[in-house]
Amino acid sequence: MEKITVNGHLIDWEKNLTVRMVLKKMNYVFKMLVIKVNGTLVKKEDYDTFIIPKNAEVKVIHLISGG
Amino acid sequence: MMNINKEDLFGKIDPKIREKIANKTIGIAGAGGLGSNVAVSLARCGIDKLVIADFDKVEYPNLNRQYYFLDQVGMYKVDALYETIKRINPFIKIEKYKTELNSLNVKDIFSKVDILVEALDKAEVKQMLIENWTEHFPEKPIIIASGVYGFGDFEKLRIKVVDKIYICGDQVTEIKNDFSPLSPKIGIVSNMQSDLVVKILVNEE
Picture 1 (cartoon, each protein chain N blue to C red):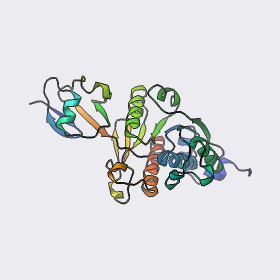
Picture 2: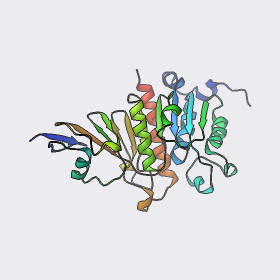
Picture 3: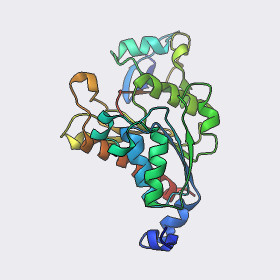
Picture 4: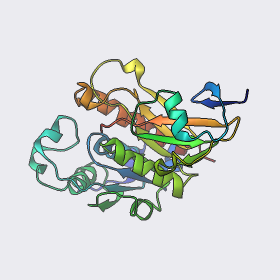
């Protein structure tokens, strides 16, 4: 089974895996995120279309209001 | 104005550090609890130039944590901050923008800065700024804050690094989760951001 890492956690990879699907799998409920896949920024409008390659490293930053 | 020179103000800072930070320009997006404190502490370090953007005016509730004074209420924050900083460090150059940041102007306003400090309030604006900055300047650092409210639990404050994105804060506390905006923690996180600016500049090739 091919894998990807999401913030250091290994999860199963599947064909046509989108950023949105990964967020759901990880139960990330924060609405405001910044996401990088293998060092490339994935903007929020591309969460449903960006396909994650096998063995990818996904980094998710949670943004919290306040300043 | 007293007759002072840079040596009077910064003479006690290691010349190697002074040299590294002397000709640098730092962008500060937002001049609230984080941005006003970041601006003042960087001015005290001897940074050459700041580019500060904020469209708000100073209001009474800001005084609980932001670097403003009663007699500045009603002024644009960038004007008030300019006045305060010049009373500390008359040598620093400051470029002010009374503009609401959006996906069209981020690139132009901050095109000449070496490092951007994200000091905004709303998470959706933070997201817009970080996405735009990272898209246009992927090789330049951005120092963001996430989770700066409440009190105590300082051991949970940390710095996470994702490529050129540095995240300061506890990454948990948000005002709507009953965490109040309080000066001590915001002061600490803003100074974590300023300290990272210095560290990144000093460690640069």
